[in-house]
Image (cartoon, rainbow, N blue to C red; front, top):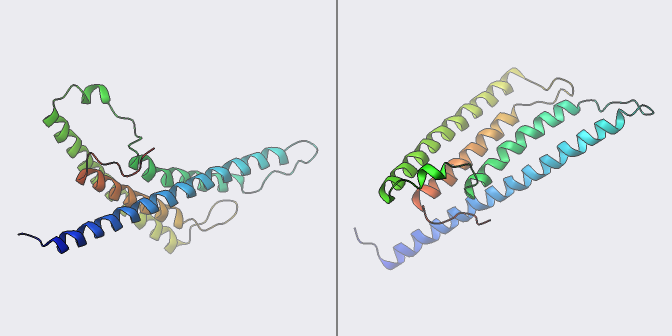
Length: 177
């Protein structure tokens, strides 16, 4: 089916908007990850300082905050790491393959990644809704924690979008370092 030049223009515009939207979400998650690291550092330092002998007042809930911030940090950093292709790869074996084999192996691995992260995202959201319904809270501060697995699921779905982009455009980088 032949498309008119105007039809191609519209599809390219939609494609650019989608890629730009995913890139914006990835960068927003990267900033969330950076803030979470800062929170972990600040809470840990405050807890250590407050435990000094002349103060002797530990930071109540430091463990809860650091645990939640750690989960948020890891989940929010995952889409950016995937977008810049920063994961560890077995390059030695991959470069021993011929061009067609590389394409096949790369495509199969990306399809497996889409399946894995799609499943992880789905199950995380279901787990978060279960935690919401039972009213699960953190140990010390009693903070509701249902949103943490839901956030992890959202980040997994963003990873799926990034991998789909890499599958459709294998030579084009989504984000350059």
